[in-house]
Length: 441
Image (cartoon, rainbow, N blue to C red):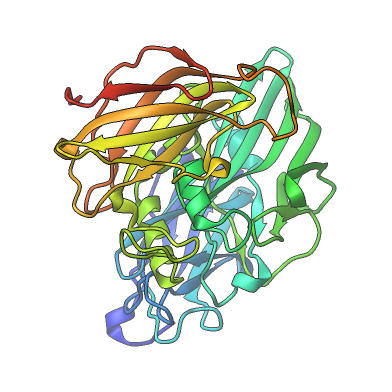
């Protein structure tokens, strides 16, 4: 950690009587006392002067967290010089006195990066508290080896979904990565998934009514589920990010590990990208990494899989069912006869999966909400050329369009530009259009 007064951290641990935490001392190495055992969450407000995620060679500082003198985890300060609160779990701690220390990891920080820690808050989640099980089983992620020092494909956010019944509950954890170096090209990500982040299911655990583990699965290479048989810290499974499209293995390790505290989400009525809308800073980090890695291009210029500034896209969330077919979105601007499509004329960019999903339509630079006149959805025949059968053997059931929005100058989702939509069934080759003249507040 830099020794100058400018970067000297002010570390505080706030007294949270309801959680049983008492302040013991105030120093760079904080000491606190727990009245009861439990899982401890830390909120570390920190910044990294002289860094920015979009600047090659000055991307971020890395901070190491020690608990009771032992390595606990690392933080990549992807928010740069902006003070930001990073929410992590320290793991289970017994009642008694403990110490926390945050220092700069000079080996993995960008050259010249500073570290300023302004504040630390901590709270204990006891075994009988709501959300305890979801926190206690949250996965620990080892950094992918080829991202060390490259500040690429960083896990930004972990969330969990919960399904409870009298027999027990199922907890499923997913992660949003800043981008992906392998797998789906960037232009295909924007067309088929409506973003350039990488969102992956990580780990699922099934518990009985007593909270005992009955089954553990994780997403392995090639998107194949596997039974978890690896190491753990208490109930937290260790998983290594192992592939360039951010799949996992339950063996091995790397020098950095991340303990992101999960947030709860109910996605029965939304796509997974709803988490990006809840935490809109993920759009900004996504865009900054695209810029740094040379994956952005000017509007109207073809440059392989590169895409435009993410603020030049219309984002669309809808729910549909497909049979031998795929959906694509089209947009018409006022006063223009030309239409713009999500798939850019490439059938492989159409969306054929079922349920909730996102897509985007690239629009000319400077397009504003009031410039958009119509949005349409087309059903495409995606059968193989030798499939045979009747030409009408396909259907797109467009059940609901939930959101249509642009990002503002700060990468925040704007207002929904489309009101309630009517379900419609389309045959391949058919299209339905909706006017965007009536904007929602």
